[in-house]
Amino acid sequence: MKEQLKEVSKNCYTMVPKGNNIEIRVYLSQRLFNEFTEDESIFQLYNASLLPGIVSPVIGMPDIHTGYGLPIGGVMAVRYDGGVVSAGAVGMDINCGVRLMTTKISTDEIDKEIIGKILKEIAKKVPAGVGKSSEIKEFKKPDMESIALKGAKYYVEKGFGRKTDLEATEDNGCIEGGDISAIPQEALNRTDQLATIGGGNHFLEIGKIEKIFDEKLASEFGLKKKHLYVMIHTGSRGFGHQICTDYTNIMWKNSDKNGVRPPQKGLACAPILSKDGQNYLKAMACAANYAFCNRQLIMHIAREAFVDVLKKPESELGLDLLYDVAHNIAKIEKHKGIKLLVHRKGATRALPKGHPANPPCYSETGHPAIIPGSMGTASYVVVGTDKIEETFCSVNHGAGRSMSRKKARSEFSKKDFRKQVGNVIVSTSNIKSLLDEAPLAYKDIDEVVYTLVEAGLTKPVARLKPLGVIKGEGEEA
Image (cartoon, rainbow, N blue to C red; front, side):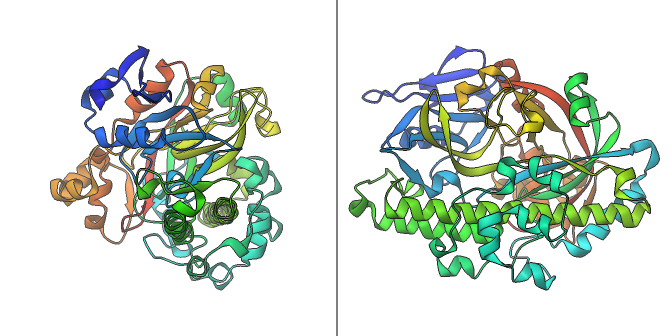
């Protein structure tokens, strides 16, 4: 289907299939377009455009690659009245998201050995990998009722963080409407993974701010060149995965009953206002709030590790939360005066300055959007421009894979992996298990980020460079 895409503006390609007035829109630079071979991901966007209540356009971000149902890097908006919600279009790891902390620590004050010690201290309390659960009893058997209703606020009130953390978290760390009665029992059996990092592309990273593009914005965000940062990328773990699996099965089984038959099971859906639709949104909110809590607890543990290793109080170290932004989520939003349910799968929100949904601390700037690369490349902090409404205020969530995990494992050796990550410290028990996460298995993060910059949708604020990372074994969606 790639040959049907026509460039209509800088880095923006579109097609409008015959018999369907819903535009398929994909953002790719010339290089990314030339290298693009995944027709299946475009076909997945087309299938999404056939769902009831879809609002044009259905969007593919520059990190687009084939997923389950909707591609990763896909954005799908539907009318709240008369539209559908799809568990697969949200994704398996509900509210997989990224949290970024700034610090007052200059890289001149710290060396590789100290970074290794901090990572080691964090890893003692934060298990990483598929199926890993916390060894801390309180996190292994959490109060799910409180998490569903309060989100990250529940743990902040218990002393695991600062009140200011909540304002710097999307939706204050709590999606409204969570109801544990909507959670299938099998999912409730998988709530033992708080304060853990998953496998796949999930990580905790310590790095330095390598380059500043906008001095004024960077200063307001507390981003200083050559200072350390901490980035956390993890989500709702097995809990969210199970909710997605269970509700995909429920929606598919009840397709005829609900009056919607999607083109493929990965897009199984239900009318938003139906019993299945509302139950899914309640369960999704619980998983999203669980993920906010997960990142909040990991951040708290990371702060403690910095204090323990550096022997200085938090007030001297900074360790302030810049922002926590979600992806793999469906949210009720207004665009062009219409109430919509916006599905972002492998995409993240970037509200521009002046947008009423911005947290007060970012109303004049727009909130930071955090775009991680691979463990051997850069990451970015960007903000959305006024033009970002063209994508329902959405940007890419990362670099995006250019190579399947299977191919990466067969193509790269441990020697290749070490060469690609360079001097970055990788805290893992088994390098061989991370071959599918080798940096060259991903697209060029600079190319991906500048696709939207050149399209006028985003503005870069800072470029970040990893120094050390904790990675978990195993593959996660």
